[in-house]
Image (cartoon, rainbow, N blue to C red; front, side, top):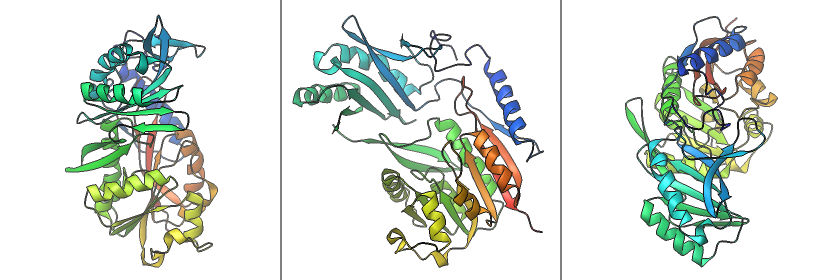
Amino acid sequence: MECKHFGACGSCRLYATPYHQQIEQKQTQAVALLVPFYHQKLEVFYGNADHYRARAEFRIWHEMQECHYAMGNITKDGTITIEECPKVIEPIERVMKPLLESINGSNVLKTKLFAIEFLASTTGEVLVSMIYHKKLDEAWSSEAKALQTQHTIHIIGRSKKQKVVLSQEFITETLSIDNQNYHYAQYEGGFTQPNPQMNIQMIEWAIRQVSTIPRGDLLESYCGLGNFTLPLSRYFDKVLATEISKRSIASAQQNCRLNAINTIAFVRLSSQEMSEALSRKRAFNRLKHIDLDSYNFSCVLVDPPRMGLDSDTLKLIADSKHILYISCNLETLARDLEILTQTHRIDNAAIFDQFPYTHHIEGGVFLTKIIL
């Protein structure tokens, strides 16, 4: 990837390191963290070093009565204006510059504009959130609707205690996974995997792991909008998937309907609540339509936030026959493996380079219970 802002913009801290060397360095770091638990060859997945990011957020800097995209600088003590960002996928790149030019042609649209967020699909749909430090009125809505039509995008306006949806608040992404197309409604403000190419590789790696075990049922915690849930459901009889976010659960249920899948039950539960429910410590009205005794879980999938797994979840999954752990923080993964490898062995491990030119590493491990 080439960018005129390398060395100034703080978004790409490995700007001076060739991409193949970045991969080698990340592999070395991952091996060092996992070697106490796993001695086989680590699978390494990487893709394009540019045009990989389907979600992007930019500050807006006002200078000479014009708006400019801005990012934090490399020294973390200020902001720089930018003219390009080669990380974003082509649908975002195509609209970034002409959109800003149109905004600068309107006093109503540019005044007190604070930030712009992009969410795009690989098929070309773009959702733009415009965030303001002012109340959005009819004049703004009128000009924003014209902007939306001009650039063939969806626009949402946000201000304090205000959200204006001009057309729709989601895009529909279609990904070819395991020789089948899956459709995902992705909502503004909800969590989505930012790198579609690597997301496909992550899901297909997960599929290869679970395809080696008897079907049974799948228990998933931190399911989000069903990113892993939908493709993996083909390899299980039934799936019980939990997530704390109401929006994510609603999105996951919508995505089930989009893909005509009827073997998944999505329930709004935190990981702690899931542990309490399955251990029968507590009954939940949210589970009254689900017969927990009908499930025969052969595998548990966890995809926790950076803090890793809580103690209750670690205790709950200790008896699982198989564990699929997707991690966005290899340090907390290594911490959790100190406990999990007391009862399980790691059959496979992989890393995924979701964010080229950064130090960030994502990973996955597949564990099987040790039979004594």
